[in-house]
Length: 274
Ligand code: ZN
Image: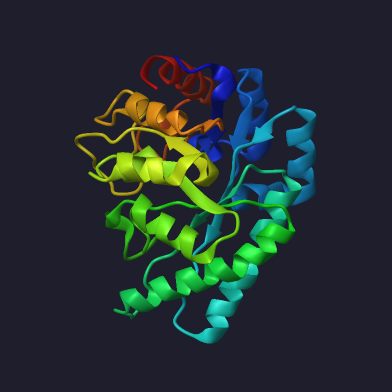
């Protein structure tokens, strides 16, 4: 059974009603040891203040969300995306994050060039890797469920993410989010292929059988169809010893609830369902 000492809260899970300072205080109050902030949440109080609060509360950072979003319709926009990723690396470094999560980006508006978008992603990650290495930041490519291929990520399987890792080299790994990869018949083999060295993050939530929204209807662990414990055991069998990061976007359910209820449910379900 997993311990609360292995739990992290991705701050998206409670973002709708609470600002980052309140969230960090609540996470610490519940005895949860780690968080994963989003960059807009960091920006809302500033990087230095975020870093100070996290340190003062004794929290660890399982990841910063997020870098990526590489593809662009023209060179200037592509370069601007790269520069934004450099700032994301700086933020991850300042927060001593276990990784910078990369949601790689979809197809630029008006384009049908999927292969071109994937080339930009590969080249962007290779470019960023040097800067991330220099800053001591590990990059974690997060493959997203194929339903997000158009608008969020043209990398949709662990296998594809690991191909890029091997292609660009350096300290690029993957973020294994059960929500995105649970359906993949090749998942077990790809977890073994990744091994400890490339498993940089592990995200948990559940896939509701009757999903009502493609983005904002993720389930609490135990409420859906994913064998989270089975996947967690496979990841840990490879030596992964990082945090189990709860990441739930739930506009009509969990985002409406009180933060103490959400966090205590995360603790309970993490123990009983993960
Ligand atoms: Zn995730």
